[in-house]
Length: 178
Image (cartoon, rainbow, N blue to C red; front, side, top):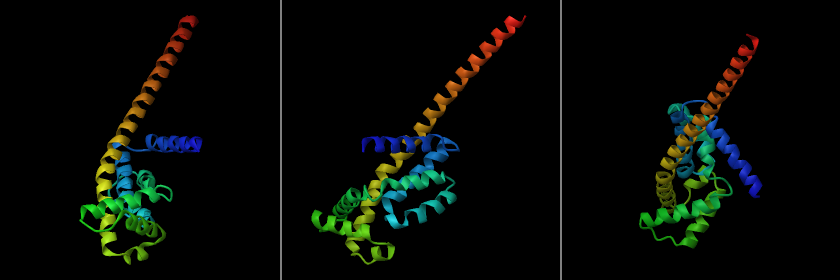
């Protein structure tokens, strides 16, 4: 399990830092994906994030993979907490158990089923989602931005070191030839 998680983290890291575009472009896409992943129910995330990534001119890969904060594994924990916190913010009366059950029902629904849920739960979901997005989106943007910058600086330093080594070797060969 740990090995599989490590491989996935390395995969996402490589996707982030090796993407084409400026660090701002890449970070904006990941932040968009994170925002959509926090606020929009799972069944509609890609339908919203991909067109928005074109409109906002940001990384399409980042916008797509960033939505994976909510996936079938993490949503079991995120949706109940998100709904409960949102319910407390709006002053609702849902208990943790009721919120947890409703959030689990929410995971099984598509968008049309989502609209048939109670207004308190829908409001709680979105308020909690916006709060989660308000925390996670800036962290994602600045985290990805700095990861990309760091990777590119290291890569450029290694290229410069290789160029120096090649130049030194060529100079030695030139001196031997004379």
